[in-house]
Length: 305
Image (cartoon, rainbow, N blue to C red):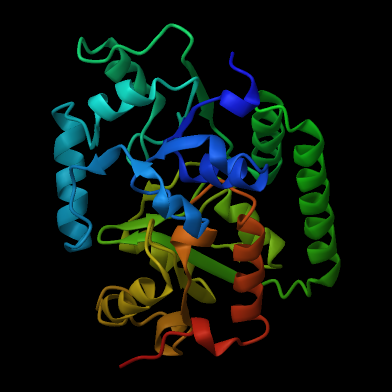
């Protein structure tokens, strides 16, 4: 493995890119995926991926296209092999949790087997697969060790754990439930680390347990769960975009009789930044969740049109 000062890194996972920047090795990042948009400086990096699914279409159509691609074993993403070859990276960061959300380890391995790909044997693939706060902390330590930034990684994790402890002490557990929706057409409940974010905020998850994958849910399940609040955190969307989806929930005649909807207790969040990624910014997401529900922060509230 190359020494840090000449180590060439390609990060195809937004959470990994965040970690690398926090560890102070942004200059070693030679290329990123099209999804790596934080911190802002990453937008200046070479992008070597693109999505085969347009993101400016309705959610139902996105879901249909993704399902069709998976059924026919077609790639959801493109990787620019020529750019990858020209960089000849020492490290490629990816993930193995979800083939839909981001470039997966399987796609990278398939790319490396492609005859057009002529990467040297030194290239190492690192897969981050955190599904909880503790596992995300472990990923930070793992990345820190790989890039020789152990001390910085330890400090980052120590600070994050202290923040989590302080949050739990500050919380007023109101014993109210919230249904966080990761998609609305069709409906998907949020999984992995998100039920833990709900717990950090002093709330209860109406559907979904810590560590579970997100899953498609029926309107009957939503009705049966009868949440006190509903939160919109559709995967990959920002606050304004998620707010725009509230109208669809308010107009859904199958569920709009629920008190949470009748009483306009729907909130939206910047899921792309604070909920969709397994990075330590999930702590900020939990704070926003608490501020919205318990402290009535109106910037997250979705009023009926």
